[in-house]
Length: 270
Image (cartoon, rainbow, N blue to C red):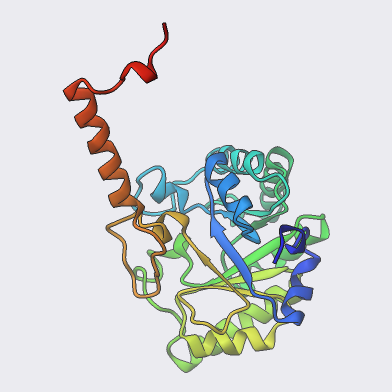
């Protein structure tokens, strides 16, 4: 598949689902990685509030700020100007009131040139999703394990295992689609339930820890590259071990500096 075949607007997403073309999604937080992911023909970049953990070293996503998200999203957009990009709305920037959600989501689009925003929650967020979409702001939903609700959920656990909980998640997904969401992330739910939800919707589902039945997959970039070495959940497949590569490179650099072999004549100016 060539870069020209990638989705260029949210209107492409249901067509991709109908055609059975799976979406390749990765998180991204800076221009350098954005350029690399763009050249690797990733379909959609998600500037996730996971940057609060990955980049800022916090335990949860809860203290991420709107300014923090805008700063990183603007950098990603500069690195990948033509790639579809969504930005997480952080905790308490959309839950308090619909007017505040509109103002904050609009600010994200104004200052980052994002294609849309992502927010967490099911039917109780449907009215907010509808209000944003009616004002020209594309919205991606997020169901299952919703990290901004980690305390209410009792930790990072698989959701929807019981029949009643599974039915609620299916109904939530339908409510989000009816409200105008253009896609839904399904995180940490049983594979059978994810397949069931995906079959019930005309918008694509994007799975993380939700099995192979979704219409696309997303991983945190640093996790799949092996840069977050202390994190190894069952759903994660590492496609590189860059953590060890970085350590080896830095040790080699340190040895050269301490031994006086770097910089050498070829690295110096006359």
